[in-house]
Image (cartoon, rainbow, N blue to C red; front, top):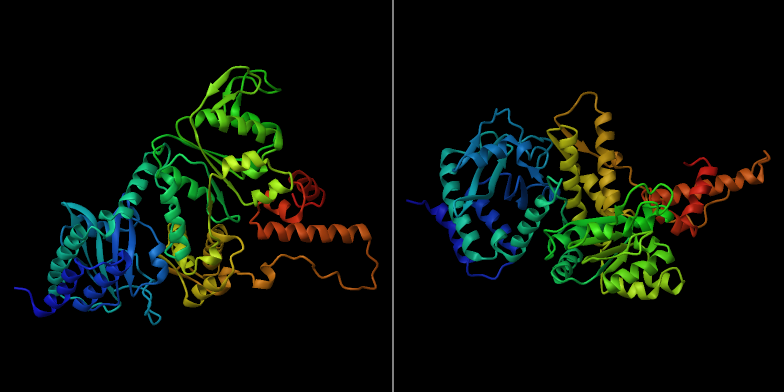
Length: 517
């Protein structure tokens, strides 16, 4: 017979079945009820998706935990929990690493979890996810807690199944599951990157993706360098009716001008010097599927005209051939330029712009996404933890605050590279390899706001009694401007050229002359 505390914890879950609650609020209430029943330092609800566990709600764990993706194969405790149909408690002296080491918020200097309890959730007799409880006190849990957790887990699973709003039975979770399956079906891919976030700006982006993904409309994805435009394109394709067909990508900024036409439309043997055989272009490779044109604003005007013809008629000719090929391709394009302004400046065709921007989709910069910074940081921390073979990789509270205060001129790409560098730097300064590595503010090497701002008028060199050659001074000044622009643009030469008002080829030549390449 159930005890009164157990009844008190379960009744709110029963009441919630008839309430209109957001998924996040439902998860939060579920964990709150669990911690009322079984006091602990931290709890979590995780969904099993393929080979990884995705945290849906945490209580008492660092915010960045929500952004982490735990590969089951890398975490023996999660493997053990999923292998047993009932609750499992790990001994305080268990040698199995705990995935939450270093993530408990109220650790008071103690980073490792010492008492761990967990139970799988089953839907239609299939493993759906996990409930976990952790404590820094090695004697926190007792046998009665295992019994209570088993009963609680059954009702939690029933509420998931019955509500129609929780996780994989909700429309959004079903779509996410379908997205994962489609990505796994793509040749050569074992896992897929995913869009991560909970901010209002991020949710608006997801709503727009859902609105347009199922159509065949051409989408122009805008946004600054590093916001994740290619990932948005992958998500649009994966949620489209063409998901089972190929997604072909072409970075228009990375190709020499002489090869762009061949890459897009293909060529026949002898079409130009070095064309030793026939070759299909990206359009033919993407037939039936989707073609993603990244940095489309970099296309030469002559190629823009030919691209427009293909978009209008669905027909193309390989370079050097008179034969026409018909293709059925959905176009997704991206640019960090303002293409409307490029049209006004005469650098981009107006008719092509209108063909590409049937549905414009703007990806918000990271600085507008609030605490999504910590979720994304959690994802990158978990990736680097596995690469560096660490038991735990975490951010100190001060480091988290610094990430939230930064303006992120390089967006998500900047954050990804920053976390990777910080992990290596922090590991290098350790006298011996730690079990849990904490990243501090000094490891992050965040530039202050003033240093991150464009250097429109750098200070002139100080006056000196030593004569300086004018040409050397000019070259030093040019070198300073180029290096600063490249740093702000995360090494993207095309973006740096636009910032400096130069043609990309001219910038490369100048950089070579200045010894920067």
